[in-house]
Image (cartoon, rainbow, N blue to C red):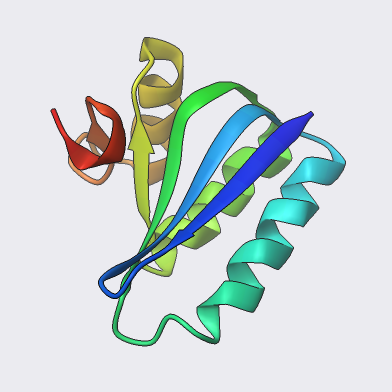
Length: 103
């Protein structure tokens, strides 16, 4: 199961995820992201994976697409940070550390 919470501010659109990004939930996240993309012009989109404990292959592929579209991916746990490093093919694309952008 995955919980997706949307935080929409003047400067940022944030999707905060909790649970497992797997199976049908990957498609749900994609729909949320693509729907929101039409209204986020000029604002940074951030996906916060701090409370995600598992990402399947389809989830990794979606995160790769999101990263390619300049979505910022944020992780906190070693497992998720390692996966984000792989998704981004660089240790510098994903922000790691505290919640809500604080280190």
